[in-house]
Structures are given as structure tokens and as C-alpha cells.
Length: 105
Image (cartoon, rainbow, N blue to C red; front, side, top):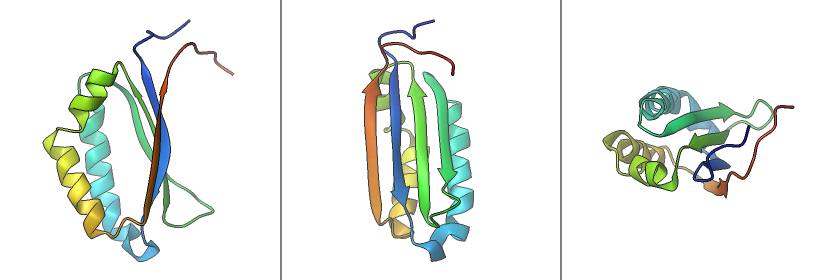
């Protein structure tokens, strides 16, 4: 089954200092939970890399670019942007892909 051609997929990562990881867990869980309740959010997940402390993998699926754009204006996302800066985010690389089809493997 093919996704709607407006569907967007986000894959990427960000890095926090290892010493900030414990303090960042609750704010990360909070922004993930709030985002999953947003209109247009199909999937939203952060996953710490078990072999690279401080590296967090990001995966998202949104019904449309408009839904993603609205996500960036939410209070919980603005709060998370401020918090991750306070935690000393070292790196962030996020890529948006448009969905042209899908297949379960």
C-alpha cells in the first residue's frame, strides 16, 4: 500500500554531551509524548544509540509538510528547543524525505 504522496518522513540524529543525558531523558520523553498527540503525526520517536553515548536517533512520519511545519510552532517544541540548547546540543542533522511508496520487509 502506498502512502499519501503528501506524507513526509524525517530521519536524523542529534548529539548531547554524555553528562547531560540523564537530565535530558524526562524532557525528551515529554516532547515525544506531546508530539505523538499532534494532528498529522503518524510516528515520532527518539532512540539513544546503545553504542554511541549521547547520540539520539530521530525518526518521524507526518501526514504532510504542513503538519510538520505546525509541529515546530507548538509550545512543547519551542520548550524542547530551548532545553536542548541548555543541555549543550553538540550536533543536529535531520533530513526530510517525501514518501513515494512503502513495503514491509
